[in-house]
Amino acid sequence: HRQLIKHLQRIIDALNSAMNKTDNLYTQMDETMGDLQDIEAQFIALRRRKGNAKGGSLLRRHSTGEQGRQTRETQTEPTDDSLPKRLN
Image (cartoon, rainbow, N blue to C red):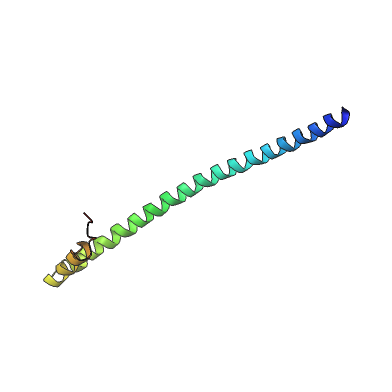
């Protein structure tokens, strides 16, 4: 009986250790996900700022003359050829 109890105690100790390591891993993963979400939010904000600055400068640069207006319209509005055809 003593050997069985010692063997069971080793199994319980190993399981406790594995559970603690798993808990630590989940904690680290949770912290990493939070960090990634922060980075993603910063990246989106940066992209929006750059997009707004770029869009504003393009409008100012092309606002004079018919060619500039036509260039802007063709860039922002897709043609019928570029749109996907619906399957009915």
